[in-house]
Amino acid sequence: MINQKRAYVLAGLTILFWSTSATAFKIGLTQTNNLILLFYSILVAVIVLFLIVLVQGKLNHLKKYTRKDYFNSAIVGFLNPFLYYTVLFKAYTLLPAQIAQPLNFVWPITLVLLSIPILKQPITIKAFIAMLISFIGVFFISSQGNVLDFDFSSPLGIFLALGSSVVWALFWIFNMKDKRDEVVKLFLNFSFAFVFILIYAIIDNIPFAVNNIAVFSSIYIGIFEMGVTFVLWLLALQAAGRAEKVGTLIYLTPFCSLLFIHFVLKEKIFLTTIIGLLLIVTGIIIQNYKKKTII
Image (cartoon, rainbow, N blue to C red; front, side, top):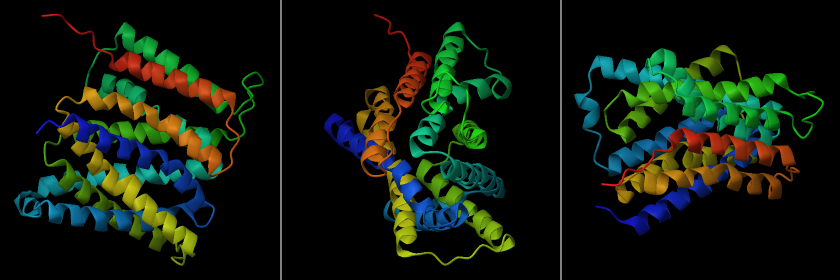
């Protein structure tokens, strides 16, 4: 049932929670290893998503899926959340949050690039202009306030932050082809990812002991970045009826995130970060803009 007020409330909660993610990542990563933070975050997300699937009465879906369905979930779960957050968390250990967060947000443009070889979609002039604007924004952000001297403090961190957008775009393409229930798919993705991160942690002999702050960060990330918030966003889109009515609100997320980064993490926000983020979002909006026809 379409309920625009409910859609905006749910979208607002989604934006609020996702806006705090970068801050939560950075706090957690100051207290523990990036892989251990990911391990506990995914564990929490699996529990939360299982409860959501249970409450929604969708556990019976699991009995109907074929081996191929589960294999697909394993592949997609490897991409996201396992590989995506492994790369992203490492980027956050190397970069200020205000740099890692907007560079990761470039994934819609990366998606266009990957759609050319994978989905055989031709690139349009509009898409080319959008990508050019967004990648100029990437340059501004990557300069970390020193746009004239080209001396980037952490090339590896920048590479990983941009690389995470590639992983997310690949996940989006493969997930788009899978028409199963979104919440159940998400639960399976995280379940397989937990197996992957557990094997990784055991092989790498990573200590599982963490302090209270790391535990709290993992719980927060597992609930409000990985679990509940995605479901809230789906519900917002469903309540709106037409996705574009609330879809554009998601562009507020990186700007709201900068507020938390500044006031909680005490990072001084570079002017180049704001300019770069504006350019990235402008490119994404241009890419997604569809001219309305008058009937």
